[in-house]
Amino acid sequence: MDVVSDAISAVHLGHPSSHRVRAAGAWSARSEPYDGAACYVVLSGGCRLLPDGGAPVQLGAGDAVLLPHGTGHVITGTAAGTAGPRAAALPFARWLATAEPATGPVRPGSGDGGTELLCGTYWLDCSGLHPLLRELPDVVHLPARVGGHPELRAAIELLAGELDTRRPGSCAALPPLLDLLLVYLVRAWLTEATGDRWPRALGDPVTAAALRALHADPAAPWSTERLAREAGVSRATLTRRFTALVGRPPMGYLTWWRLILAATRLRDTTDTLATVARHVGYGSPYALSHAFAREFGTTPGRYRVRAAERATTLARPRPEPGSGHPR
Image (tube, one colour):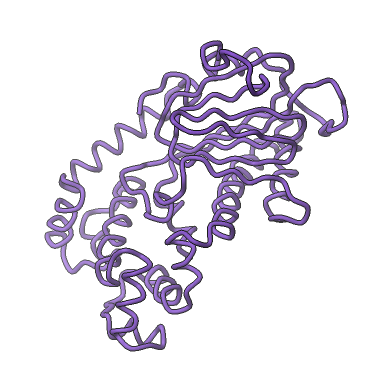
C-alpha cells in the first residue's frame, strides 16, 4: 500500500455517514468538535463555512471543503455581513431534520436562491494519526475549477446520485464512494500544497522510494543501508533527505509506523500479541510491549480493551458528529 492509503486506513473507524440536503432562506447549522473529519460539497447555490478560530470561507457551486481534524464550525446560508449566524445556528442533527432531502438531478440553475449540499462525516482514531494527516490544515478548501481534479469531480457526481437511497444498491455503494471521496480530497491537497512537508516528501524521488519500500513491507529486516540501496543513494544522502522532509530518520519512522500498525491490529482484530508482533516486525511479544508502552503510554492489552469500549460506543445509535457527541 502507499503512504496515503496506509495513513487513512490506520485511523478509519466504521462506516462514514452522508446526506444530500437542500436549504433555502436564512439557515445555519452548528457542528461541535469531534474525533473525525467532515466534508461538504456545494452542488448548487452557495454558503459560508465559519470554522472555530478561523476565517470564514465562502463556498460556491462545485466547491469542496474538508475539515480533517473535527474542527467545530458553522455552515450557513446567510450572506457575509449578516449578524448572528453563529448564535442562531441549530445543532447539526436538528438542522438536518428540518432541511429538505435532495434527490434526483442537481438543479444548478433553479434560481430559487437555495443551496444543495453533500455532507459527509468520518470517524477517526486520532491516537494514531499519521503526520501526513496531522499536517493537513484545519480547513482544506478546494474551489471548483474547470479541469481541476477530475477524479474528485467524478466521485462527487457519483455520490450525488447515490445519496438517493431509493436507488437499488445505494446502501452498498455509498460507503466505498465516501471513502473514495476522502482519498481524493487528501490527494487534491497534496497536489496543491506543494510547499508543505509531506507533499515535498512524496514528491522527492529518494524519500518517496524509501517510504514506498517501508510501507510495502514494514516487517522486513530493514536497515538504513538496505533502504539506501532500495532508494539508489548513499546512507548519508538518504538519512539527510528523509529526515529533513519526514521529520524523523528512516529507522525512527519505521519504528513509529510499526507501532501504529500494531495498534491498528489490536483495535481491529483478535490476533494474539505474538501474531501482531510477527506481523509488524518485532521478534517477540515482550519487545513489542516495551516499545508500545513507550509510544502510547499503556500496555497493548489495555489499549485493546479501550479500543473495544470505543467501538461499542460508536456502534450504538448516536447523534450526528458535531451535535453534542464528546471527543
